Length: 133
Image 1 (spheres, rainbow, N blue to C red):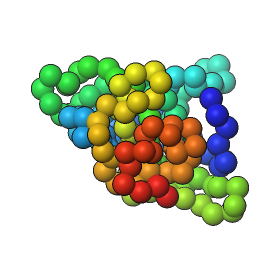
Image 2: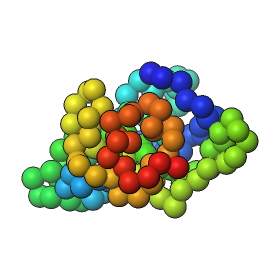
Image 3: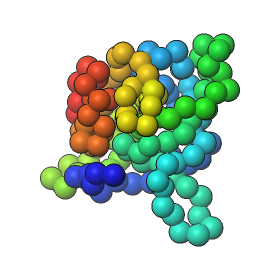
């Protein structure tokens, strides 16, 4: 995985319910796993900005509910620090569902802003975003 130009903070636990920020048909998703997440033994996994996570659809189209998809975290409420010294936080926690392991998004557009750290690690997701902060 590509290194990011920010000191990211632990933001989302397993079981956190977040907004699906794309037009794939899901509205709310629950984090059920973090891919390539590394934690100390005995500590619960956590997700942060631009992480590859497994999510289960809680609210959305009837044929999607309960299914598990890959996703990328594109916004987090908890502030994190960029190496330029600025601190960034968003209004909500949000994710974009992925179609495959290569990082192609399931939807065709992303609602709301996407962090620059996501652009560095997932260029295909940031291509369909309206704007990158």
